[in-house]
Length: 577
Image (cartoon, rainbow, N blue to C red):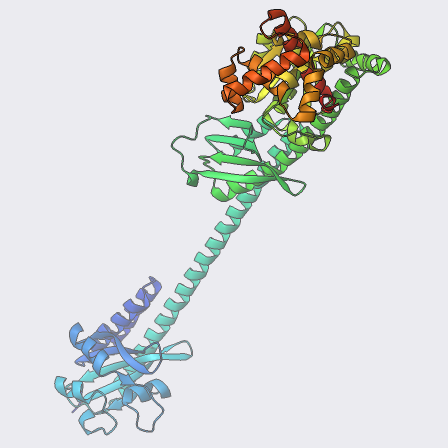
C-alpha cells in the first residue's frame, strides 16, 4: 500500500530544530532521543530506534527509541540483540551497519534474513522495516531503524527524506562530539594552566623560603633565630631543634605540644659529616605539607651550617681553655706566667680565685680523644655556660676533671647553686681549694683533686677542703714525704703483717674506726665473728704499740689512715711497698 509522506516543509522545520539543539550543546543521548521522536512523527511509522554496537562491537543494541515501553526494550536487548557478522545472510540492520547503505524491507514476514528479531516483530505486528546507517564523520556508528505494522512498498521519496534526516542528525552528532572534545581539551588546558600556576606559586614560595633562610645563615644568627624563623614560615604552633641525644638546642612557639597528635608534626634530619647531628620538629604547621617539608629541609641545611660554625668555634674555645687550664695548673713557673698573660689579655679571671675541681662520679673516665663526648654532657654544657659569666671564668678540662677558677668571695653554697642550675645530675661532685695567687694554682689543683678522689663523691654536691677534716689538713701540707713517713711509722707493721699473713688488719682498723669503735658492727660489716674482731684489734695494738682505748692514739690511727688514702690516691702502688 502507499504511504502518505509528510510535507517537505515539516521535515525542514524538524531539521532546523535538530540544528538548534546541536548548537545549544545538547548531549549525544539527547540528540539520539530527539532523532527517534522526530523520525517517528515525520515518517508516521509505529516504532523508531537508534541502534548502537556494544563494547565488543559484536551486537547492536537499542539505545534510544520511541513507540515501545522501556521494559520491553530492555527485554529485547537482553534476549534478542542483533548480532553483527560477516556471513552472507545478515539481518537488514546488520547489513545497513556494515555496508553503509540503507535497507528497506516491505514485509519482514516474507524476508528470509529477518530471523533474529522475528519473535519481537511478530509479537508487535511489525511488517515494514527501514534501516538507515548512522554516521559520525567518516565512520558508521549505528543505525536508525523505523518499523511499521502496515506493509509499505519502497518509497524513494520517503527513503530519501529519512536518509537526509539521518545524515543531518549525524552531522549534529559530529558537531556535538567535536564540541565535547573541544570542551574536554579546554578543561585539560585549564587544568594544565592551573597546575603551572600552582607550580609557579610553589616555586616562588620555595625561593622566598630559601631567601629568608639564606639571610639567617648569612646574618650571623643563632639557632634560636633559626627556630623562630622556621616556625613562622611553616606556621607551626611549636618548633624545636634537638641534638642526637634529645637535648633541646632551640625552640619557638608556645612551648607545648598538648593536644597535638603525631600526624600534626613535621620533621627534618640535620646531617653533619654524614651523621645525624640534630632534628627539627614542627608541630601544628599550617603550611601545605609538601611546602612545610621543603621548608624544613631548607632549615635543616642552614641548621647544619650553624651547628658546624658553632661546633668549630666551641672546639677552638675548648682547646684554648683546656690549654690555658693545663698551663695555669702546671708545675712550670714559666708556663704559668705565660698562661696568666694570655688569660688577662682575654679578660679572664685568674687572680684572687679558688680552684673548683669537678668530676662525674657516675660516668666513665674520658680521655683526650673523647673530648667531644664530655663537652656534650650536661656537665660540659654547664661549664660552657659558666665560662660566659661576668667576670669571665677560666673553665677547662684537665685529664678526667673539669677545672674552674672561681671568684674567691663565692662560697660553696653559691658554687653549688650555680652548678645545679644546669641540672647536671647527682653524680657530679666538686671540691673547692683556695689559691694564694696564680702562682699557687698548681698546689690548689692537686689539693682539690686529691680531696675529690678521697671524699669528694660524698654529699654535699660541693665541698671545701675544710669540710674533709683531717684529710683536708693533711692535703694542705706541702711536705708530702713527711705525710708518707708518718703513715709508714704508724701503719707500717700492720701493712707488713697483711702482706705476709693476709691478716686484713688495716681493713679491720679502718672499719672499726668508721663505725664508732664498735666491734659488733665491724664484725657484721666484715662478715666475721665478733671474737675475730677482738683478736685482730689486740694484734693491732701489739704491733703498733698504740691503744685503741686512748683518744690520742685513736687520732693517730685516723690521721695515718687518711695519709695512707692520700698517698694511694696520688700513687696506687705506694701502699704495696
